[in-house]
Image (cartoon, rainbow, N blue to C red; front, top):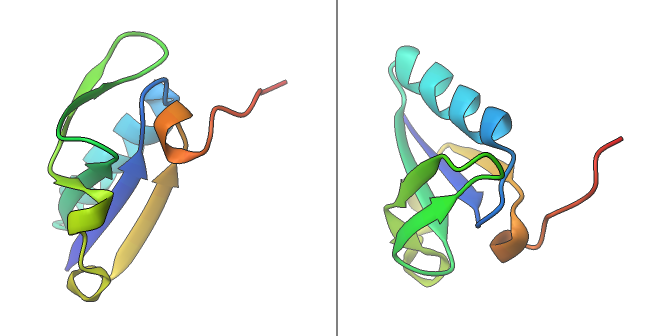
Amino acid sequence: MKALIISGDNFEDFDLLVTYYRLKEAGVEVKVASLNHGFITGKYGYEVAVDETLGEVNPDDYAILVLAPGEGAGGGEKRF
């Protein structure tokens, strides 16, 4: 089973990283997609490698979709 996490810079570190590692612990292959190749950086400085750009994603390859909003993924919402 494969999961895709879509995010961008300034993501909420806890949301993305805990989800990423929990899925991996469950035996799921996890990929991260964003607008550009390279790395995305969370609010607290954690960097995550981007596996695919959004244009390269084939939805048929994934059984799970996780949205971890960041500035580059249409997120960046304020939390209270």
